[in-house]
Length: 125
Image (tube, rainbow, N blue to C red):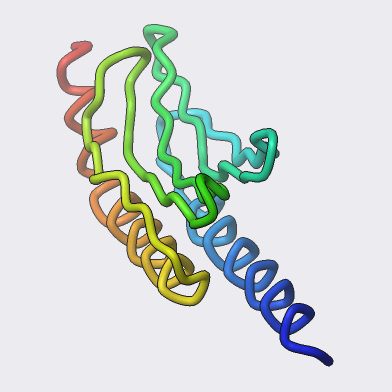
């Protein structure tokens, strides 16, 4: 495999790994569905969407995209339009570094998911 093919394989492996981490987010009292979207012109967003009993949707997600000759990585948790966790947008020139940040962001987003959903459920009652 040439260098570009190895880079593409690394990107696919990282996206699969991150999508798997976020797809495993569950809560016993809240419906959830994993998602992945292509974000034109050259990006991907993956995560899990929870639907609370009051109808609000809570999204746990990360994304990576090509921007201005480099890579932009984002991550966070939103409830409708409210940002519950906003990780800083990182613009990185190197794909390997960007993929490491993507992995870190997926872990950060997933880390407190259960507690965050519990807190949102408590606020409903």
